[in-house]
Picture 1 (spheres, rainbow, N blue to C red):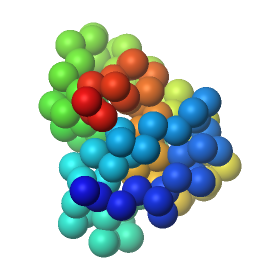
Picture 2 (tube, helix red, strand yellow):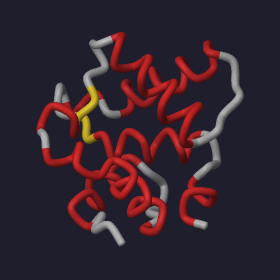
Picture 3 (cartoon, rainbow, N blue to C red):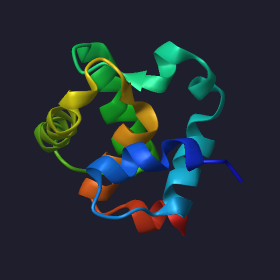
Picture 4 (cartoon, helix red, strand yellow):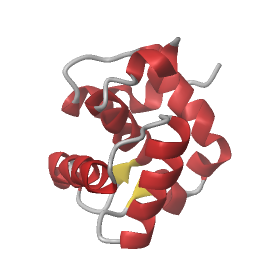
Amino acid sequence: MADASAYAENIKKYSNGYNQAAAEKIVGHLGIALRNKDSSIVACSDSGELDRVREKWCRGKLGLAHKQQELDAAIQSVCETMKAEGGQKSRVTFYYLLAEHFGRLEALSG
């Protein structure tokens, strides 16, 4: 089981609750990418990266069939929510907030 404790405080800053099992699944899903500083953060200024978040995380892992505009709007909303982090938006927190937004935390933790 992946250890999500390092991300718990950051997630709690932006989320209404904290689903540890879901956070652990996200950490497990990201795996080795979290060891690299560049791949452990989300750059909201990089449209290519945001496209990957939409396609690989929202569509791929979360299985969302929403229109591209809806997914992009949710991603922009998380960018706005986390803007206090500057260029250091934790990928774990970012993915968690997207899963929470679409009501998919239970699916991740189940």
